[in-house]
Image (cartoon, rainbow, N blue to C red; front, side, top):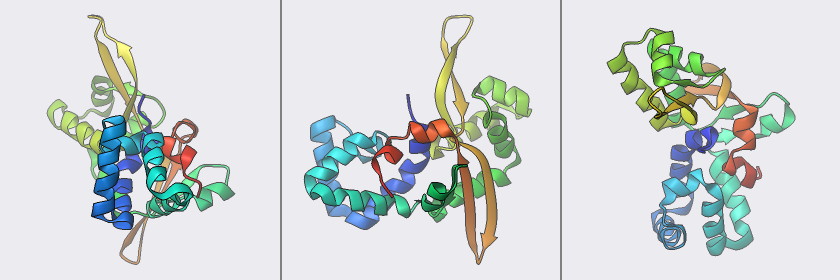
Length: 204
């Protein structure tokens, strides 16, 4: 099963890793990941144990500090450690913009609101949100790609086929514009934090 939080963080984390390590080191790590696990950086970040094991081959115990630095550029977990309600601040402006753009789109906003509490199939989402099928499918696919929606469950249809159900990694979102920057805070679901391979390994 994929983890919704890891999916949400993966694109930004990949960029953060490249910025911190440089392209040539990243290429060497990717090469080693292919040799050992048959996967590239993108896939390995979503299964962070594999990425972590290869990073340790290159940097030993120094991997701890590097991983904390990678993640700190994306979300600020310090605030989460102080509070019991799982709020984190999104540091990465690209990820913040993804939230802002999705909530600015009435259809996407409705879709997110519908699956915050429970996971639903695409047809149920479209029906409840009253979103047209063609544009609805396209928008849901865009949100799956950006990690805002994740398939963590499925149901069996009358014809025996498995139908994916979608949900979010978060319960709540707050947004502000501060000094031309988008300030986004998300309240993470408990299960998405517990199941996140990234949060289990990275100690910030």
